[in-house]
Image 1 (cartoon, helix red, strand yellow):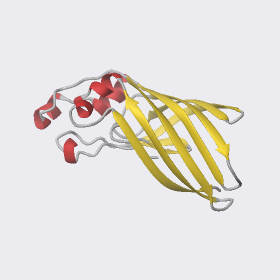
Image 2: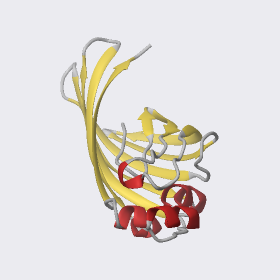
Image 3: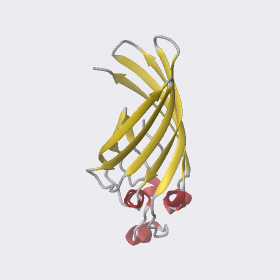
Length: 180
């Protein structure tokens, strides 16, 4: 799944990478941020149709430093042999370093872009995500996902968000999976 701009992260069952930030269009006068690989730890608990999980993750390559803590609750249901659905809320906390790398504006970037210099602290993001999966075979499936998230705190107040972006971010995606 690819989420709205900024921040972006990629997911495939487990968090494995964070996407960078291109310096094109409205962000052309800001520095480019290279994405990277993420390492982390996740614990999960199943209770009936619900899956609860908590994860901590940190990039070890790329331009983003710091860490994130991600809490999720997910209702899951199998409607038939081929159809599965899930829906649930999530809450993400990003550390000061992570937030500064994603939403901060240096004095140099400010001079180039006309946006105010900004040095944020950590922030939280909350949202709701749903997915619908169709199993083509025992190995192949197609999943459609959609969600909405709300930036809060210093991320929401960043000129990147308040002047040229949106604090409420909707996202959709379709992907195909192969199970080994």
